[in-house]
Image (cartoon, rainbow, N blue to C red; front, side):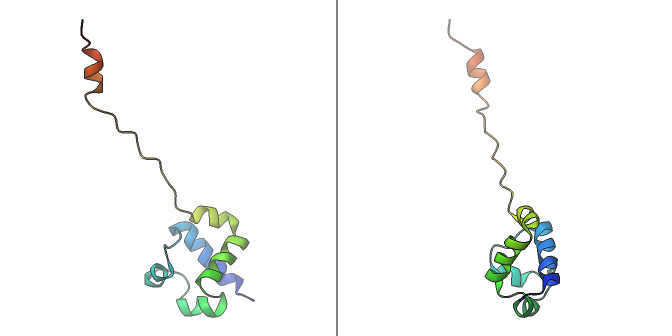
Length: 88
């Protein structure tokens, strides 16, 4: 059994701040709503917490995933100059 309140607190926090890269990053985060000890005793270990989070709060899970933005296509600044100067 796990503490639903603590899991929801963590889910909301991760939805707002994003998932940590690893457990070590989570441990170093001083702003998390639940201490490491509380998480382990009430929810379970890090992997267990992630699986419960994904299973019970899918809407927060989607928000917590890192957003990958496509890189802008770099255009050659001389491209337009080359196109305008065609040989006759």
